[in-house]
Image (cartoon, rainbow, N blue to C red):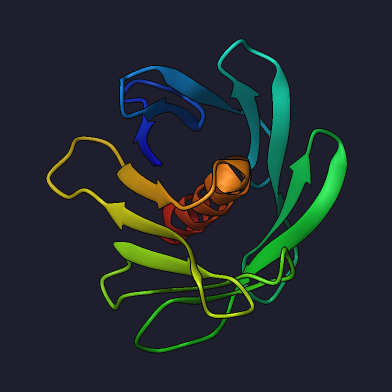
Length: 156
């Protein structure tokens, strides 16, 4: 299953639309005015389904992931010099990216691919293609991509 993840061009706060291959809105993401990033994820009918919150005052950027109001885990950038690497205490997953920070792969504890994330270049806004193996992992992959994009945005 593929999703297209697009940042809105004219938005004061972080705002994204996430589409399926047929162009239907699967998720909408709305940023909240706060210290650090706080991103609320709404499903296609406008119901709140998740939140990505930046944890402040940490050595490396860290984001907490919530499904509804339930804490599911966090993702934290690791100190590396060539390839971006993130530590995830979530679903036993591991994520790593290429040196340009455009492509990422999420693997489960058995080394099987959960999702492949590719950033499309030459776009006016951040646009990612998410190739997700199982539909039930869709929200979790979206949360991880939001955290990675927010971390890169804060750094730049």
